[in-house]
Image (cartoon, rainbow, N blue to C red):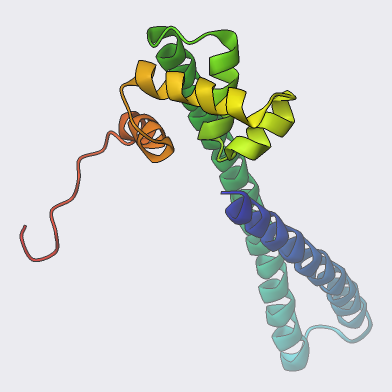
Length: 171
């Protein structure tokens, strides 16, 4: 998601630069066209220039609309990520309470869910690796799982509630 968000931001920034350059060019051509019409009157050549200026102004507005759409999409993505984080955090909190984890076990379990190994958890908590190993064993027992992967899987199972699609060709 972070990559997608950064890509949208880069696209919006690049498009903003293009739109600003188009707006500057459009302003120049509008002023040039107005000056030519005042000096020489409207002719076929200036009518064609006028059509080009109109097309450029339309492109500027179209680009501005694209920037707006990208900004709105980025905001929607940010809101969705925030909502998902909140749901995941609530699920973790509820599960830890359901399993009656001690505060230390909850810390160790949370680090494990985040992908930390025993050595990393021990370093982060300032504890011995054996202590962390014992705490993880208690977490696994209280959660009714036998491994780190099974612990993670139990959370993913609750987060992924969509129906499993039928394999291609079996619909």
